[in-house]
Length: 456
Ligand code: UD1
Ligand code: CA
Image 1 (tube, protein in one colour):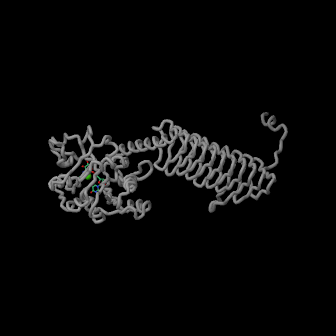
Image 2 (tube, rainbow, N blue to C red):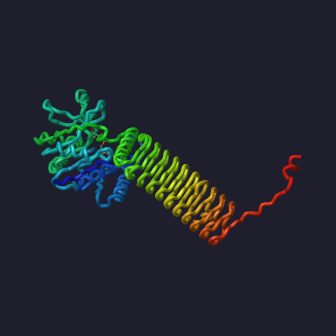
Image 3 (spheres, rainbow, N blue to C red):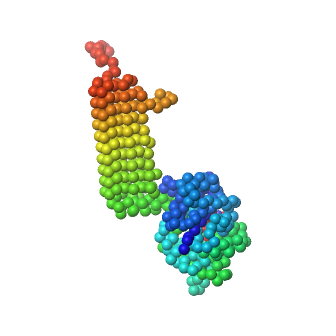
């Protein structure tokens, strides 16, 4: 049977105390809303409809950019309750089949919980996931009769003292019969403490029509409950990162002290790679086999080849590191850095939009920007490509086998030919022919006895 999905995401999320709508807050580096949306897509729900209100335009751009027509956004403004949100989505929904309803703030929910809901939802008009909490305050309570049948959900604001003692709460994850939704959603009334249209009133409505209802309890409430505060957001990131760490370890990656490392959702790593404590990944990170990363390395959008190591305190962004390359400690690879195999980049070396060929080395205190460096080049300590004239960036080309002496400035655009040697302290302003030596410094002179005379 076809399952449609509606994701409720129109609320602001007051308890975040933010200008940014709650569902747009990043969780492990991507907006919270993407998690339930991607789950719905992975479960092959059709259509997937997101109800947006606060910062609807941003939500549209986010989802349009990622999923195009694969996700529909409908507007709910002003937000007048979860039932009203579903009412706004109704025109986009098929007449029959099932409807999965999720909230935009449940990044930890997995297919396993949805499967559990499905199993418990045979022939029901309304099935929903529940949880038992030691502190249920704020949540809708599940009211059952003496035989354990669900009678209704009562919101905290509307609950009496006895109902408030109920510790079973509604998580806000539902599987609904679409025909039932179409025939009842328009009849919801806002006669309650919050003057809102409650989606949860569909439970009592189903009972009134003698339709079956199932409240299905989950084991781990934390995974199904929405994020309301920044503290809960931080906790969700920990849980997600730990989940990713477990998945990587199962594939043969060692993560030393996973509690201190922050992974990203789009991470892959090959066998026998090791991630040392305190690393932070974001964007799309690809590690080959047998890599060694960290401790304390920051990687965003990069690919690291087999056997490469990224040492302590390196910052890598939008770059590629070749097989068996060695980076760090204290290296910075900026966007467009492409290191070939067996390249060494050492401490306080910054590389931007530059390629380094196989086996080339820049081990100390160097800036390489807009450079194409061949194979087997040695870049001495303190080498600078002067790539910027105040208006434009210019390229530097260093051909295979060249030796760049320490404290060299390469004033771009400039080319150093194959196997050429640059003497230490040289300012290179003209192209250097292959096999030549270039020296530009002033000849050294001595003043005999100068120091002694000065002391007198
Ligand atoms: C809702 C449930 C409550 C449950 C709790 C679980 C109702 C009436 N109550 O509580 O039983 O225990 O979730 O977290 O449904 N939203 C809209 N439009 C609106 C209002 C809300 O899209 O007009 C969205 C929010 O963006 C959010 C979700 O619906 O993603 C839940 O809203 P929220 O206000 O957090 O939940 P409650 O109404 O407090
Ligand atoms: Ca509310």
